[in-house]
Amino acid sequence: MKKIFEIDGRAYTLESEADFGAEFYLEKKEGEISYFKLKFDFVETVIPKTVSLSYKMPAVDIYGMWDPMSRTRNFGWLKVPTHSRLAGGMPIKQLFSKSGKNRYLVAISDVKSPLCISMGANERGGTVTVQIEFFTNVTGPFDRYEAALRIDERDILFDDAIQEARLWYDSLGYRASNAPELAKEPMYSTWYSLWQSMTAQEVLRECRQAVKLGMKTVIIDDGWQKAIPGRIYEFVGDWVPEKRRFGDLEALVPKLHAMGLNVMLWFSIAFIGHKAKNYKRFEGKYLREHPEGHYAVLDPRYKEVRDFLVETYVDAVKRYDLDGLKLDFIDRFNSNGKVEDGMDFTSVEDATEQLLKDITEALNAIKPNMLIEFRQPYFGPVISAYGNMIRVWDCPLDSVQNKNATLDLRLTSSSCAVHSDMMYWSKSDTPENVATQLWGTMFSVPQISNIHADTTPEQREVLKNYLDFWMAHKSTLMDGKLNVKLEGYGYGYATAKGEDEKISLAISTPICDATDTFARTYMVNLTDSENIILKAEKGSYIEVLDCRGKRVGGKKRVRASLSEIYVPLGACIKVTK
Image 1 (cartoon, rainbow, N blue to C red):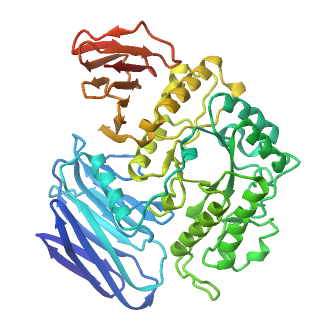
Image 2: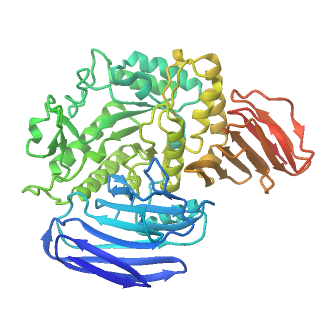
Image 3: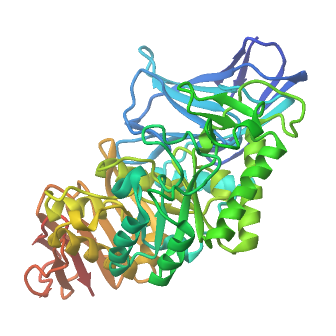
């Protein structure tokens, strides 16, 4: 099937191997925002084949491309795909100008079904091809389908356009969960530090130091459960602590609580290991087997499966007196294209959402505001309605990716608490480089995963200085109005504005602007220059604190509206009116 729709002088081509009734029309316009409606009538219930909607537009003032998951921002002739489904990604993509203005943003109302948005330059004609592919993985079955497209062509800041698109999803009913204050407190994670061979004594050892630094929660990650080294998921699904190696979890949690720490526990939500006692219980109720034969992926379309998972987490929370759960690998709930008797859902996406709803309701009935962490790539309007913590995907020691991804998530996660990937460092590294990693994620909740004994006293000073500053200014950093500036294909500057203070992160632009009405302005220098251009009112006071929190020079008065200030790498300049 191939159909062409002419709308406002632009040709939209709809193509599919299947033949069915299709409508595509402009529903309304609000200035330079257009709302399109797409409808498919399959006549009978089907598992739909891929449907492609493509069109061309002029390539005017386009410098780069943004989406919530891409690690690159470049715009080229190869169409760069943005994949989305309920448990992975978000159906939004944008073209922006050299000056960081929005040029074209498309958002799709269907945040559940697997789809893909691609954009790329044409080799001839000075145009961009936009292609939206629906049903890129097995989904359905259904006999009708509707989706709305919101296309924003306003000449506004690119980040404002993205945040307004996220608000559009809120208006469609996809409101993010309100993160409790506990979700906005620094956390210690055992993942990078203690890995999958940790013991309870090691957890206690590291947590004693974490508390001294001001961390409020520990996430006991993968490795607490029964496992065989190298085949770590063979026993998942029984969720029995590995007592010979790890120790007694029931005895550990009260000790952590006594320190003043809240406790979260890791679970791989989708897996049942082949050596787990529960494996045979769910034979015939798996989406697929792992290719190496270690475990299988549960099918949430069976109520028995969903009930088992909910009961598992409820039992763990009650048994160990947990304060939260880290639920991993939700993205593995991918349809296998089969629909069997005994299922109460035909769509894996719908069943996954029901599972998340059941888990959230059951846990909050035990403890209100239970902490639930998800991470990239499983984020987006549906996921953030159930998890109140969204973390950057694993990027160990990658300060650039950690910084970029925290800002990406802040633009798209609404009221959900965005967390950095766990941060750690080499004992041989400089305090300034440690500071670069920490400050780069300051607009997200810090997760720390270093080993105390492998941290120098100077590095510890950097961490303490950072966490003290973050806690003192948490309200502005997490709840203030966030704006980011593009530089090349990354972020060059970011600013959060609170009631009476402004906090900025300079990544490639060595300028501190304190000319607005805020009583206090802070700027952290992560540029390659130690000379910062300060714009400030005469008579203001300035202080510079290095990465360890020690004053660089004395407190000075501003004597010129434009001046050059020495601010070393990882240091913070404070301007007070």
